[in-house]
Length: 160
Image 1 (tube, rainbow, N blue to C red):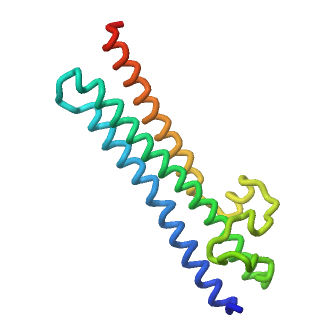
Image 2 (spheres, rainbow, N blue to C red; image 1 turned 120 degrees about the horizontal axis):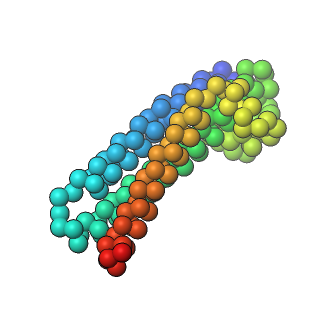
Image 3 (cartoon, one colour; image 1 turned 135 degrees about the horizontal axis):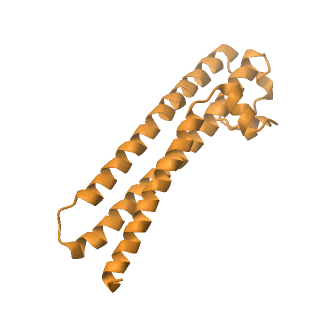
Protein backbone atom coordinates (compact mmCIF):
# COMPACT_ATOMS: atom_id res chain seq x y z
CA UNK A 1 0.00 0.00 0.00
CA UNK A 2 1.29 3.44 -0.94
CA UNK A 3 1.66 6.05 1.76
CA UNK A 4 -1.17 8.62 1.29
CA UNK A 5 1.27 11.54 1.66
CA UNK A 6 3.53 10.14 -1.05
CA UNK A 7 0.59 9.39 -3.30
CA UNK A 8 -0.77 12.92 -2.76
CA UNK A 9 2.65 14.33 -3.69
CA UNK A 10 2.85 12.23 -6.87
CA UNK A 11 -0.68 13.08 -8.01
CA UNK A 12 0.00 16.77 -7.26
CA UNK A 13 3.08 16.64 -9.49
CA UNK A 14 0.99 15.08 -12.26
CA UNK A 15 -1.68 17.74 -11.81
CA UNK A 16 0.92 20.52 -12.10
CA UNK A 17 2.39 18.90 -15.19
CA UNK A 18 -1.06 18.74 -16.79
CA UNK A 19 -1.66 22.36 -15.82
CA UNK A 20 1.57 23.35 -17.62
CA UNK A 21 0.40 21.46 -20.71
CA UNK A 22 -2.96 23.22 -20.49
CA UNK A 23 -1.19 26.56 -20.75
CA UNK A 24 1.24 25.44 -23.47
CA UNK A 25 -1.03 23.63 -25.92
CA UNK A 26 -3.14 26.67 -26.94
CA UNK A 27 -0.02 28.67 -27.74
CA UNK A 28 1.25 25.80 -29.91
CA UNK A 29 -2.13 25.72 -31.68
CA UNK A 30 -1.80 29.48 -32.36
CA UNK A 31 1.76 29.14 -33.65
CA UNK A 32 0.91 26.21 -35.92
CA UNK A 33 -2.27 27.82 -37.19
CA UNK A 34 -0.54 31.14 -37.83
CA UNK A 35 2.47 29.56 -39.50
CA UNK A 36 0.44 27.41 -41.89
CA UNK A 37 -2.00 30.24 -42.66
CA UNK A 38 0.82 32.70 -43.29
CA UNK A 39 2.65 30.19 -45.44
CA UNK A 40 -0.48 29.38 -47.42
CA UNK A 41 -1.30 33.01 -48.19
CA UNK A 42 2.18 34.43 -48.72
CA UNK A 43 3.58 31.81 -51.07
CA UNK A 44 5.11 33.37 -54.14
CA UNK A 45 4.69 30.58 -56.65
CA UNK A 46 2.90 30.04 -59.94
CA UNK A 47 -0.90 30.21 -59.64
CA UNK A 48 -1.48 26.69 -60.96
CA UNK A 49 0.57 25.29 -58.06
CA UNK A 50 -0.80 27.77 -55.53
CA UNK A 51 -4.33 26.44 -55.95
CA UNK A 52 -3.08 22.98 -55.00
CA UNK A 53 -0.58 23.83 -52.27
CA UNK A 54 -2.67 26.40 -50.37
CA UNK A 55 -5.53 23.99 -49.50
CA UNK A 56 -3.04 21.27 -48.58
CA UNK A 57 -1.16 23.57 -46.22
CA UNK A 58 -4.37 24.81 -44.61
CA UNK A 59 -5.80 21.29 -44.25
CA UNK A 60 -2.57 20.07 -42.68
CA UNK A 61 -2.53 23.04 -40.27
CA UNK A 62 -6.18 22.38 -39.41
CA UNK A 63 -5.47 18.70 -38.82
CA UNK A 64 -2.59 19.49 -36.46
CA UNK A 65 -4.72 22.07 -34.68
CA UNK A 66 -7.52 19.53 -34.31
CA UNK A 67 -5.12 16.93 -32.88
CA UNK A 68 -3.73 19.40 -30.34
CA UNK A 69 -7.24 20.51 -29.38
CA UNK A 70 -8.20 16.87 -28.74
CA UNK A 71 -5.03 16.46 -26.68
CA UNK A 72 -6.01 19.52 -24.63
CA UNK A 73 -9.47 18.03 -24.01
CA UNK A 74 -7.96 14.78 -22.76
CA UNK A 75 -5.45 16.66 -20.66
CA UNK A 76 -8.22 18.66 -18.99
CA UNK A 77 -10.24 15.49 -18.39
CA UNK A 78 -7.34 13.78 -16.64
CA UNK A 79 -6.58 16.97 -14.72
CA UNK A 80 -10.11 16.92 -13.31
CA UNK A 81 -9.62 13.27 -12.35
CA UNK A 82 -6.36 14.08 -10.60
CA UNK A 83 -8.01 16.97 -8.77
CA UNK A 84 -10.82 14.71 -7.56
CA UNK A 85 -8.28 12.10 -6.42
CA UNK A 86 -6.39 14.78 -4.48
CA UNK A 87 -9.62 15.82 -2.77
CA UNK A 88 -10.38 12.21 -1.81
CA UNK A 89 -6.88 11.67 -0.41
CA UNK A 90 -7.04 14.95 1.55
CA UNK A 91 -10.37 13.84 3.04
CA UNK A 92 -8.89 10.44 3.99
CA UNK A 93 -11.08 8.70 1.42
CA UNK A 94 -8.19 7.29 -0.60
CA UNK A 95 -9.80 3.86 -0.52
CA UNK A 96 -12.49 5.20 -2.91
CA UNK A 97 -9.86 5.54 -5.65
CA UNK A 98 -9.79 2.34 -7.74
CA UNK A 99 -6.74 0.17 -7.17
CA UNK A 100 -7.06 -1.77 -10.43
CA UNK A 101 -5.69 1.20 -12.40
CA UNK A 102 -2.59 3.34 -12.22
CA UNK A 103 -3.67 5.75 -9.52
CA UNK A 104 -1.73 8.67 -11.00
CA UNK A 105 -3.74 8.46 -14.23
CA UNK A 106 -7.32 8.87 -13.14
CA UNK A 107 -10.33 9.95 -15.17
CA UNK A 108 -13.39 11.38 -13.43
CA UNK A 109 -15.49 8.36 -14.43
CA UNK A 110 -12.99 6.11 -12.61
CA UNK A 111 -14.03 7.81 -9.39
CA UNK A 112 -17.79 7.57 -10.09
CA UNK A 113 -18.25 11.35 -9.93
CA UNK A 114 -21.86 12.38 -10.38
CA UNK A 115 -21.26 16.06 -11.15
CA UNK A 116 -21.75 17.79 -14.49
CA UNK A 117 -18.80 19.15 -16.47
CA UNK A 118 -19.88 22.70 -15.62
CA UNK A 119 -19.84 21.89 -11.89
CA UNK A 120 -16.44 20.19 -12.20
CA UNK A 121 -14.92 23.14 -14.10
CA UNK A 122 -16.23 25.54 -11.48
CA UNK A 123 -15.10 23.31 -8.61
CA UNK A 124 -11.56 22.94 -9.97
CA UNK A 125 -11.35 26.48 -11.38
CA UNK A 126 -10.01 25.26 -14.69
CA UNK A 127 -9.16 28.17 -16.94
CA UNK A 128 -8.05 25.57 -19.46
CA UNK A 129 -11.66 24.94 -20.42
CA UNK A 130 -11.72 28.45 -21.89
CA UNK A 131 -8.49 27.65 -23.73
CA UNK A 132 -10.21 24.56 -25.09
CA UNK A 133 -13.05 26.68 -26.50
CA UNK A 134 -10.48 29.07 -27.97
CA UNK A 135 -8.61 26.17 -29.63
CA UNK A 136 -11.87 24.89 -31.13
CA UNK A 137 -12.48 28.39 -32.52
CA UNK A 138 -8.98 28.55 -34.07
CA UNK A 139 -9.40 25.06 -35.56
CA UNK A 140 -12.75 25.99 -37.10
CA UNK A 141 -11.22 29.13 -38.63
CA UNK A 142 -8.35 27.15 -40.18
CA UNK A 143 -10.71 24.54 -41.62
CA UNK A 144 -12.96 27.36 -42.88
CA UNK A 145 -10.02 28.94 -44.66
CA UNK A 146 -9.06 25.59 -46.16
CA UNK A 147 -12.63 25.02 -47.35
CA UNK A 148 -12.78 28.46 -48.96
CA UNK A 149 -9.40 27.81 -50.54
CA UNK A 150 -10.65 24.51 -51.98
CA UNK A 151 -13.74 26.27 -53.38
CA UNK A 152 -11.49 28.95 -54.87
CA UNK A 153 -9.27 26.28 -56.43
CA UNK A 154 -12.23 24.44 -57.94
CA UNK A 155 -13.64 27.70 -59.30
CA UNK A 156 -10.29 28.54 -60.88
CA UNK A 157 -10.07 25.04 -62.34
CA UNK A 158 -13.53 25.35 -63.92
CA UNK A 159 -13.20 29.13 -64.39
CA UNK A 160 -16.44 29.99 -62.56
